[in-house]
Image (cartoon, rainbow, N blue to C red; front, side, top):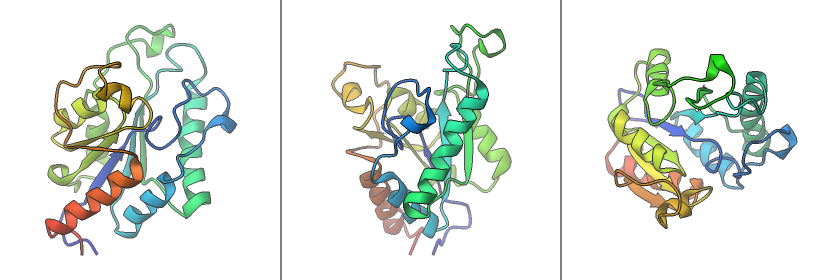
Amino acid sequence: MVSNSKRLTVFFDRDGTLNVEKGYIRNLDDLELYSDAAPAIKKLNDLDVLCCLTTNQTGAARGFYSLEHVDNLNNKINTLLHEEAGAHLDAIFSSPYYARGSVPELTKDSPCRKPGIGMITQALEQYPDIDLEHAYILGDKATDIEFAHNAGCRGILLKTGYGQNVIDGKYQVLTHKPYRVCEHVGEAVNSIIADWKAEGLVK
C-alpha cells in the first residue's frame, strides 16, 4: 500500500502523546493509553509505516526509579497497544540523560536528549531506508517541534498532555512553527495519512 521506495515513518513522543500525562510514573499500572492511540497506530501498521517511540525519560537520572523501570514502562506501551488494537511500535528509543540529574552516570548533556537528534540517528542506523523528508514527529511539547525541525521532519503539536499549555504560552516556548496542530494523536495520524495520499506516497 506504500508507493514510496523509502520507508514512511512516524516518530511518537510518549507521555502526553500516546499515554495520559501523569508526571513521573512510578507504578506500571498507572500507565494509561489515550483511547485513540492504539487504533491510530494500527492504521499505520496496516500501511507498513514504521512507527518509532522517541522519548526523553529523565526519571532515572533524577533518582526517581531505575533504568529497568523506564524500559518496563516503554515496553508496556507496546503491550497495551497490542491488547487494545493489535497495534505495535516497531522500535523504541529512549533517552535517560539529564544535565541536572542526581545519578552520576546519567547526569550529562546528550545529543540523544530531545531536541537533539541522537534518537533519530539511532533510528537511521537501525532502519537506513527511513524517508526523513516525509517523516512526522508527534509530541505535546515545544521541544518535540524543535526536535522535528532539527531532524528535518514535519512536527505535529498535539493539544493533549502539555500541548495546550504550550499553545497558550504557559509552558516552554515554540521557537519553530509546528507543521500542524491537532487535538489528539488520532486526528494527527488521520491527517498524516491524508497528506501521504495527496502526495501519492500511499494508496
